[in-house]
Amino acid sequence: MASILGTLTSLPAYTLFHISWLLHSLRRPLILVSLLCLLSNPSAAIAKCKLFYTTFLYLAFCQDKKFTIPKDDASQHFSSEFGGTASSAPSSFKTKKVIVIRHGESTWNDTFNPGGRNIALFVLFYIPNMIKAILTEAYFFVSGKESESWFFDSALSTKGVKQIEGLRKFLQKEKMRLGSGNFMDEREE
Image (cartoon, rainbow, N blue to C red; front, top):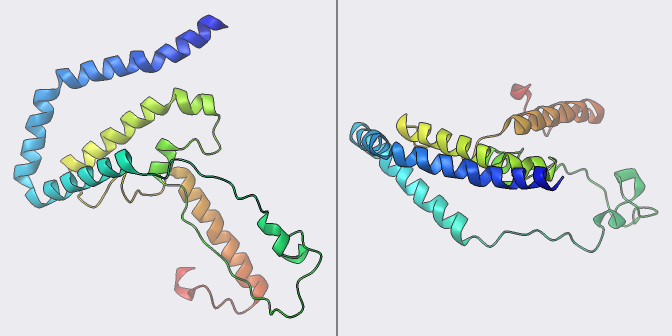
C-alpha cells in the first residue's frame, strides 16, 4: 500500500519534470511562434498578453481561497411548501416565486475545483488538466482569438453545458406549470 501511495505522489513530480524538460526543449520554437503571432495580428496578441497579465495577478493575489458555510440554515425561513423547514409562511407576507440562476460550471472550475469528483482523482489529474488548459490557452493565442480564454471569463465546460440544458428544461416545465410564463422569452424556445 505504501509503495502505491509513493508512486501516486511521485507521479505529479515526474510529470512536471518531463513537462519542464519538454518546454525547455521547445522554447525557441515557442518564442518564434509567439513572435509570428505578434507580427501577424498585433492587436489580438497585445490583448491576449494583457489578459495573461491580469489573470496572473488575480491568481497570485486573490483572497477568495476558502468558502465558509453559514451557520444558520436558510431553509428555516421558508415553509415546507417552498422547500423549507418553517411550519408555515407568515400571513402578513405576499409570496412571489423568484428563480435565481447562477452560471454553469466553467472550464476554470473544471481545472481548479474538485467539484463532485473524488479528491484523489482530482489531485491525480490536476497536472494533466492544467497542461490541457495551458495548451488550449496557447491555441487561442496562436489562432488570434483574443476574446477566448480558458482562465479568464471562461466558457462553459461539458458539465456546465449539461447544467444549462437541465436549467432550460426546468424553466420550460415551470412555464407550463405556472401558465403565463412571462419570465421566459418566447423566441428562446
